[in-house]
Image 1 (cartoon, helix red, strand yellow):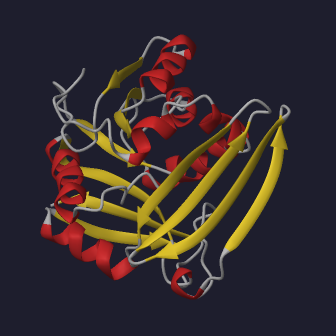
Image 2 (cartoon, one colour):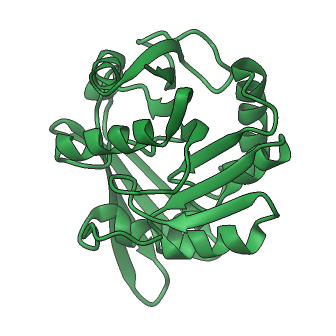
Length: 249
């Protein structure tokens, strides 16, 4: 399902559709996804044979794990390349759509919506981030659950610039992660041996309080906040994640 939102000039449109994006993040593998989602499955106790929307699903690694746990899964992502891979690997009970998370409109509601691995806060215009929450709310059943897996923003304002270099399949990736205003930015230079390509990632820095307020103003009640994929308690100074479990109010 395509929509009319013009996102072609936004940073994520070209980067997420690039073949280099899945190369750089290939360490985010099926085993990691399975362990995390098994814990969520046990904790949430969603209805058996329930329905889940995997929002910003990428190539569908979370969707595949959720489907293996017994759910009917719909995945939505802006990247045609990612959706093509997800569809190729899909089983009956999985469905994938190309759509923008700000404007998607599916003909069903879900027991839960999962937005995982910091797939929120991509937009410099706060109204766009609110539109995401509005779309999520509209697609949830009464008392449906929203799982928002976001970075922990508290340590980042004082975090030093972080430089990394790695070679994957003969291609050199150089990344520079730094703060820029109210965003955390990762500049990515890719040397293929024939040319150097440049991309960037840009995510708004929302604290737990920011996210709780946004969710509350858009029809959600926050029930739990965890600080890691092991579902440890959230500790602002040291937790790697800000994993929020909210319910449609």
